Length: 484
Image (cartoon, rainbow, N blue to C red; front, side, top):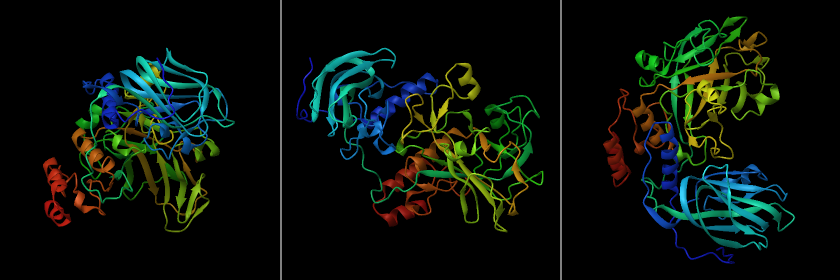
């Protein structure tokens, strides 16, 4: 039976967005063999969709993407292109027994549409067929079990597209209550990141991701981080030979990028390079640490100027002095400045494959993807830290003989193999990224000293009990005393 109402039902559900995120991560990562699934305590009429992953056939703009239909905020919305055949889909993270769906339309509503449910996003069961929609708030009783729920429009009620303030799915979910208040409610969140600072290590014509076990096969690369990195590198070898140029000794990871030459001579970076670990999604508290052994390459060696400029990883292009947004190496840089480039990596993982080769072999395309409109796509549901390489070389003046060995100025790319100590990485992600801080390599935010740190001055882990004592301190002076 379905019921269309002009007003919402009574407030009989409890939002469990945090529990949903946990269930999604557990479901995804258990497939990769990293953690086990959790058992939820079923409670009928639970709001399951808030904060879930979404997708849509189209969006009128980036600020009107599908995720805004599940954010619990009536000042935001999803709006489609102005055509009849449009759809919006929600991934609940795992299958649930469903009991009703509520649609809260903006002025542009659907006159005819279906609601469909699926367990695999391949085979769909229609649970509601609406041929006389009137807009407002429509609530439909359904009896179904599934992980995916979608609205498929066939006729618009206005000359605009379809526009939903909220698309809510209810069913038997994990019981939950109000989220705990933040420990420091006065802290404004302006950043969610920490840094890795790593100096130059060595040059080699090797690439263990693209040409594994083939020394000399690659163009020349500049290596920072783990000193042992070469064509034979694996996550196991990085942990076995952990000496690193990074400030944090527990970071045994390998980072490399094409060498830059001036007059045909490779240029060594002469200051510590900065690698930001940051949130690539709006819901920064959902970011989880890299899985052990994750490897990826970002950038496109064959990119045109326009492809380089509009790439999802592009930040400011080539920079020196006051020059930025240059998509080619500048012809001249002010004397004494350094040539910089910043580029961001994809930060959404498919939850299954650890290497590009493994993913391609299984026919799944890339195992990494960029966020879309502030959230990870359904195909890559696990949000991991977004790396942003900020690389600088001591070259200035006439730049006509400065070039990348990989080809054009737009061939910039870089490689990463995760070999962090898992506990240190977890603590940094939770404290700095999930905690909304702007941290140095030790996990310390200079502007919020009362929040404590992850590593002490000797780069040893601070016990988590200390962080708990900071959170429990009654005032700023007491918090300062705990961390001093």
